[in-house]
Every structure is written in structure tokens, then in C-alpha cells.
Image (cartoon, rainbow, N blue to C red):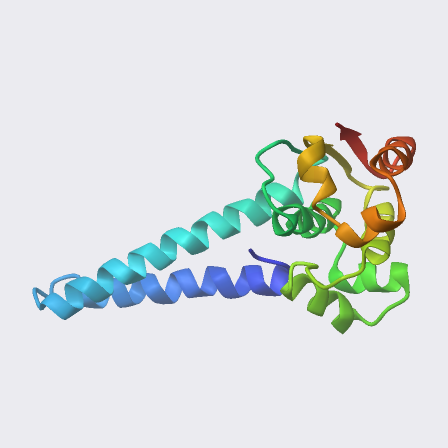
Length: 172
């Protein structure tokens, strides 16, 4: 997943470099060259998908996720998607929640896996000013997302608080 414009630029440059390398080997019949070209083409496809996803998110005003979200990691990747869709840079998000830009970079590099629930909610509140997120999950999946929170609060308390907040719309 491309996290910022610098990575976007790097991915675009990577496609250019790989395209040139493919052209250089395109007439070769050597089995290793053919295999290398195939690998480079696969990498170009991956980079192209990531670029398209980033560009889509840059122009999105509403993100909607449904039962396709299967894991905590999938849901936490949506935090990055929201930041990109809101047009906010990592630096701007860091300033909004009063942390160093490097901290946001670390959060995103790890897809927010080790970030506290409270911090994720804080970030969602900031991002929800510019983008609306609709999440539809089954209760069984919601219960497993943040086990530490569910030790303190009941499912009903969490759902009530989430539904009351403008920062996150949940259809449970």
C-alpha cells in the first residue's frame, strides 16, 4: 500500500525503470531473461494497482467497508485509507494529534497493529472531519477487533458510543 506522495513518486519511477529493463530484454530468448521479464511485468502490475488505489483514495469523499473486512489488520488499514482520502499528509496528521511525523510513519508502516485503541479513535476523529467512513460488521467480528477494550466495556456500550459519534458510522 502506498502511504504518501513520496512513495507514489517512487512507485511511478519504479515502473519507468522496469519498463526500460523489459524493453532491453524483450528480444532475448534466454530462459532466465524471459523469466526475469515475467517477474518485472508482475511487479509492474502490483505497482500499478497500488498507484490506482492511492489515486482513488486521494479523490474519495466517502469510504465504505463491509463484511469483506475479515481481520483487525484489514480494518486498521482503513485508517491509512482515510488519511489519504482526506488529503491529509502524515505530517499534518501528526500535528493534529500532537506527535512527531515519524510516529505516524511508524504507525502506518505497521498498519496501526500495535497502536492503542484510544490513539486509533483519536486519529479517526481527526480524519472524519474530511472523510466519512461507513463500516458494516457482524457482531462476532467486532468483538474480536480490540479485545482489551471489550474487557472494559460491553459490546452494547461500545456500539452505542460508536453510533453516537459523527467520526465513525457503524451499521452493526
